[in-house]
Length: 455
Image (cartoon, rainbow, N blue to C red; front, side):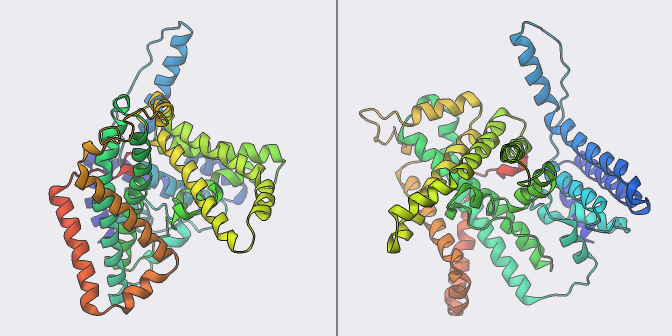
């Protein structure tokens, strides 16, 4: 029933995409079974076949035209004009997620970390399970597939916790992210019309928007699975309270960052190599991570920037500690933590410029104009407030404050305790306000597709 429902769910995107998903499932299932029957020293061809077929499928649908256009651009600068073919292929929604999930399974079977799944419908459900299918989290076979073999029964606590998670995800996506998107999209799509404070506000708003958009989907996915009795891995852990970029990547898109750690960074040698090779491994891993996010040079630059900052952070780690020990002692250590969070947040927000910008040239235009503030630099028009109006702008600021307040309380473990101790009427008043805010946003608000659907 779950498999049929998942296929029915996915077919709403486009029925043709369903056949690509089924084909990927059959290929990876067959390769896993072949590896399970082959001797250890004869498994490698099947493993490499899985790598090339999965990456090849992703390349064809997502990157073929990108590399062709890039090659044509390079040849054009050399006055070599070559007619390079382009394919008009639509990108199947969720292909980056289920491809990486299947690829992780193939590598784990090869390394004897999981046994090859014998039942086709179990493996097919692992690939197509509808809550994480479109935007993750990217689950491991060792965590998810055993759950499909266990009987499920109605559990009141699972259902209530799952529904609360879904509601909070809807609030983050529809009430916060989608409203912020109106301001962000207008400013970033008209970078020539704005400078100074408007670009800074749009960048900070996008920092909040992408978190609410993506973590909102994850909350809904985890909540939907929990209602059915299944546990998906945690994908976000209050990332904007990180005190370093290294810590940020332990808290942001955890399923992807751990996937790249286990299947790219560690096979390259990890940190068990020379210092320069270690830095190379970090940079290459983040470069590939950037490319995974999209077929555009903006994502490549975003990944490279994260890799460079992380290398710089590691290289200056001891200096940072000595400086902190001298300047911040005793009670001032909390001030140091706040400064570290602010610096990290600033670096992350700066990198998001490349992630959101429509082109690399737009990104550099934004950076160049961000600190240009004229005589009327703080007027309503210059701040971009006229894009949404003063009441809407104040509403956006309140939503950002609400989000960070809730995140701070949840980070300290107070939310569950607080909500659990509230009287029933108060709890339901909160649920009712959240529900109606989502409903009103859905009916009267501007509907925005999930950002990570494009990946």
